[in-house]
Length: 308
Image (cartoon, rainbow, N blue to C red):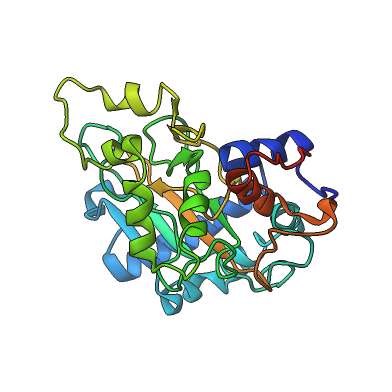
């Protein structure tokens, strides 16, 4: 496949790690103007004033209802963030014409997740780890979630500023678990099987007895673990500026993290549904999308899929 936006190195990073960042998929000033629309909504709904920290009573706000988000996603401040650059980057990973959301003027930005502020000590969480898709039965070639795109409507200036935590390499484990369950799995069951399949993941979510002397940041973020299948796992916290996007394979495990900065983080969690199920056996190798190549690499390591 020929890329429109992403470089070959970025696509290879996506295949190996399960995610890649594209800077300024939509202009920063547009992202901040869209953020102000959400602030106005919060003031009406929760009495939260952007300029008065004493009104920030909720440490985290997660808007998932379509009727809620439609109130601001239909506004011109958000519409201009649906750029051709964003759509082309999505298609670089899922394949040209294979995603129903690309090129649609009123495409939504999905769940709006706002991490306001917390003064609890920052650590790698044991709770919240999952890959997305609680509304459909999961197969290794499902069409309902072709790509997870995290759209930044605020800056994530550095570590511990509320960035969504990702488990690099976890997309490989999810692919194997789904392949081993061809009759399909419900979302909760799939996540459970994935976690239970690996001792490192079991420790990450606190299923094994905790060693009080374990430094979780050191163990899970500063070191890379190689599982019995040769997959390398590590927790990372992508940072970026308003207008950047993080494109994730739909199988990547992720979790919310505490925002200790004191500046709320605004993130759109965009789901991109495919027009048809993925194909993991194509006659023409060049027709595989990077999303499909990831799965082939995980399932058929002995027949190495080609690099880009």
